[in-house]
Structures are given as structure tokens and as C-alpha cells.
Length: 477
Image 1 (tube, rainbow, N blue to C red):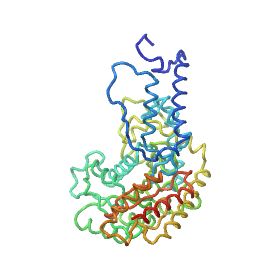
Image 2 (cartoon, rainbow, N blue to C red):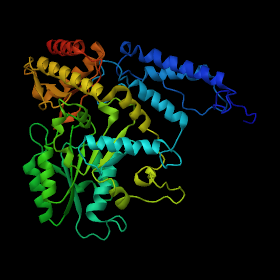
Image 3 (cartoon, helix red, strand yellow):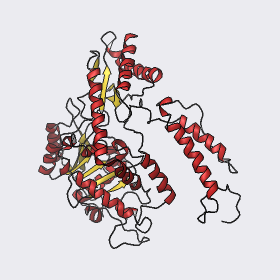
């Protein structure tokens, strides 16, 4: 490299000339990270940001010691999902090999846009995702793509559904006289409305379907909404079912929804961003019965498979539909005779090689390993539910179906109008006094406490602390 005024470790010299400098920076950075992660339980699960990183653009290079100091500040001011008391969201501590996978992928800097830009990884991704699609029961012609988030997965699935069912790949929606609509639970993820907006349908094209007391889509309401839409001159084209709602973790009745979709010849998409992990559990995969009838599925290994963010897939029963109803060829890319250029089939073009950390995690932990983790999560969830049921002033939002428990206090010694404030103060009390972070979602117009028992290091002692924190707060109000 020409003699430029740059740090010796600015790049890795491909001849190895600066290996010692780079190795030293790697070692120091890794030490800082490991020092934090191996003592994560000593820090708050959700710290306050007291010192912000500098946002000015320096004229000259900063010393590596300054960068490492900034890294330490960042670590201690960031969400800490490794803490056993971080039990508020579907965010997990990552597998070790997925951390390493991200490092390897960044170092290789391949591009999942095309085969020539990622020759091995562009073969690994479709092969591995085809196997996972078959675990979902989607059949021999199924397959999928990785995308950067569940919102993009839902967007891509509904884009293909729109193009297949409405035949609008080339001319778009402008020639259609009947407004297209789709149906989703009133508790479906907000990304469904975003997708409808981006796809030119408008957010009102997502017709919300009422749910029952257990947060599951009402079949009677679904059937009625479809019939009303047809009578109103609209054109239904898809149903979105959810396997693991964001707030309560409940699963829509997939077999019956699939039957309704077939009756009306509608595309069935299942948003299994969270619950999809149950395909790895012999004890609990029956909860996903019916998902094998889906036309497309969203699944986020970054959640219950503990793969570092981002790692999300969208699967299709007929993977070939991407070729016929979504592909836009890139003439500047060479074509491979055996493997597709994934960027031509995806919403994204240039894309990080997330497949590497997923593949490494599956190899390192294995299906049985994940099954054991999931079973442990269920056991600790059962323990929590049993403890909470002993307190008469607590109410459940639904019957838990996974490792998510949503509840709130309804103390009869205060006015009902103050219950939301009571639960808000309880959440703050748990974080401040017990280093326990539970989230505070809005559900059916009220504030609830949500616990997600995802961390494999969250054990009964953490649950005991949670119950103690609730009890001490209740006694003091």
C-alpha cells in the first residue's frame, strides 16, 4: 500500500506485513468484549446512557486506545441481553459461534448478491434453507432466502403473494378495478401494515380480524371478513396467520385458517418469526400443526435459535415462484448454470453473509441441543406461571403457549383507573431494585408486563427474585 498517513492497522495487508499490529488490535478488542460478556450479570440489563460517544468526524486518526475506551463506554451503555434478568423482549444472548460467524463474514466481506461474489455461501444458503423449509413440512420444492429482518421477510412474502394471486408483476396495480385486500389478526405484527403500504396497497388493505380471549385469530370473524370484502367489491388475495404473537406469544389456529385459505383460493403466509423455532422441539412442534400448508413462512433464528442479529429467513412452498413472479435480472452479474444469484430473487441486492453464523450455530449446537434449550425454556415458564397464579391480584393476558408470559397487576386496593400507572411503577421497581427488566407493552388498550424466558441462564432463582420483587412492591402500595 502506498505510504499513506493511516494507522498501521487500518487494513489487513494481504502480504502479512502488518499482522502483528492487527493481531494486537484484535486481541485487545476481544479482551474488552469478553471482559464484559463474562461479567454481564454484574451490569444492568438495561442501563441508562450517561456518556455519549463523540459524533464529530475527526480530521486525523484517533489512537487505538481511544477507540477501545469508546468500546467500553458503548458496552456498558447498551442493552444487555446476556444478563439472566433481561427477560423483557425476544432478544437473546448470541451463540459464541454466531459471534465468530459475524467476524468471519465481515473479514471475508463476500456479497450475497451473486454467486461470483460469494461462490460458496451462495450455494450454502439455498441448500440449508431448503432443509429448514422441509422441517416445516413445506415439501420437496420449497426453499428460501435470508433477509435483514422480519419486516423484510413479511414484505417479500406478501410481494410474491400479490404478484402470484393478482398477476401484477409487470403492469402493477393501476389497471385493477377491484381493490386488493388481505387479512391478518388484529394482533399481527405491524410490519404487515408496512408491507401493504410499500406494496402500493395501503395500510387499510390489511383487514384486521378479531381475536379470541387467548389472543388467537377468530375463525368465524375471518370467514365473515372475507365474505364482507367480496360483497363490497374488494379482491381478497392473502391471509397472514401468526405463530407467536409479539405481546402474548400465542399461535393462531393454523389448520383451520389453512382450510379457509384453500376454500377461497387465498395465499397463506405464516409469520412464525418467533414460534418457528418449535420445529426443532419434538415435544412442542405439534403446536405448529398446519404450518406445513402455508405458501410462505417467516422465521427468525435471531430469536429462539440465539443467532446474532440479523438472521431472518422467508421460506416458500414453491421456491420456483421467485423466478417467475419476483425475479429481476441483473445484467451486470454473471449467471451461474446451477445456482441462482440470490440478489435477483430478493428485495435486497447487496447483503451480509448471515448464512455463515446460522450454519455455524446449527453445526455447533445441533437439533437435539436446541430441543433441550427449548424444553428448558418451557419448564421455567411453567414454574413462573405457577408462582404468579398464587397472587390473586395478578391477571394473565392469555394462556401461555410458548415461553412468553404476559400479566398485570389489578390490585383491588387501588382505583382501576390507576392500574396502568401501578404496573408502570412495578416495572421500574423491578429494574431499579432487582436488576430485572420486563417490558411494558400496550395490549387491548391497557399496560401489561411481558416476560420472555429466552436466556438459557435464566433459572428458578431469577423467577424467585421476580416474584419477590412483585410481592414487595405490592406490599408497599
